[in-house]
Length: 231
Ligand SMILES: *[C@@H]1O[C@H](CO)[C@@H](O)[C@H](O)[C@H]1NC(C)=O
Ligand SMILES: *[C@@H]1O[C@H](CO)[C@@H](O)[C@H](O)[C@H]1NC(C)=O
Image 1 (cartoon, rainbow, N blue to C red):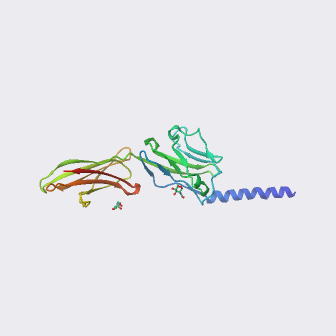
Image 2: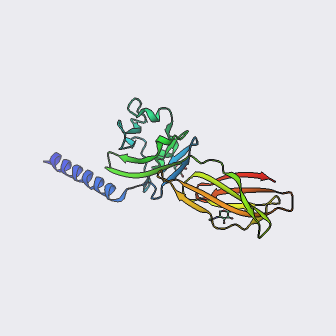
Image 3: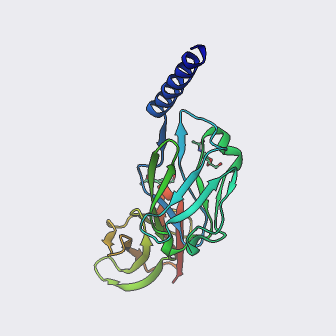
């Protein structure tokens, strides 16, 4: 009789603990897309809140659109090899010291264009998942060209163009001393690959020998590319 009583209490306690955990824990990814530059490394965020040690649990990163879908699997306190999609071979890792803090963020090295997609971070035992969208920007250096003469102002019109941005960047023109030149608003075109091409024109004085810089920058992703021209 005693034994039965104890068993009953033990199992209802387990159910209770399970439900409390399940109710409280959230897996947090990123509501904003993560942007990586081609060839660089990127961290896809995913963590359990409130923090809990997940070292002993099975943890899965996957790309549901691929076959096989696995990107990185952690099981029995180590990386489970041999199941992942070939695309990711040798390029993924977890921050092992962070697992005790419930941080399951994935490091993806040497980003390829094919890495672009929706990643699922999943804890099977909790049935919790979250998604992280990765964009890959093959950002290129801007190109400055001579676009014409401005007879009215006795100047030269320079044009700067740069492709492969996400999100939309801003374009600045600077003179040799680093002073900002006033240019019209840049023209922005979004391509079928979701990436932006920007171009901007500026009229500069022909009288002095001078050099000019076109700087294209995107503050959210800390990307800056520059081109220079001497006339
Ligand atoms: C998870 O770990 C990564 C790598 O150390 C770090 O960049 C990130 O800020 C951590 N996230 C949290 C929520 O602590
Ligand atoms: C981006 O950062 C630069 C330098 O800090 C700043 O001058 C500029 O206004 C910022 N641009 C935007 C759109 O926030």
